[in-house]
Image 1 (cartoon, rainbow, N blue to C red):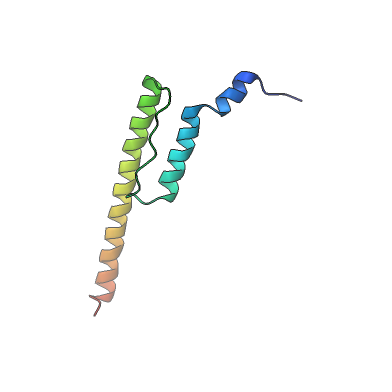
Image 2: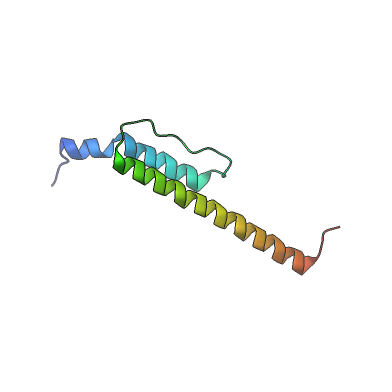
Length: 84
């Protein structure tokens, strides 16, 4: 039977990991108009890089979702014609 060390327990409750959980949940559940939660905890070049990369991935995701919605709307219009 293994037990967690204090450093392992602290890793589970690290403020940046808590922020990542909130941020990823927001990206998964919230519309683009909702601002993502901001991280104001301790940081370094690694946290900055992760946040910058996640921001870029989120922008690409939202752009792809908008493009897909536009394509679907266009296909629907071409199939059904303008609604009257």
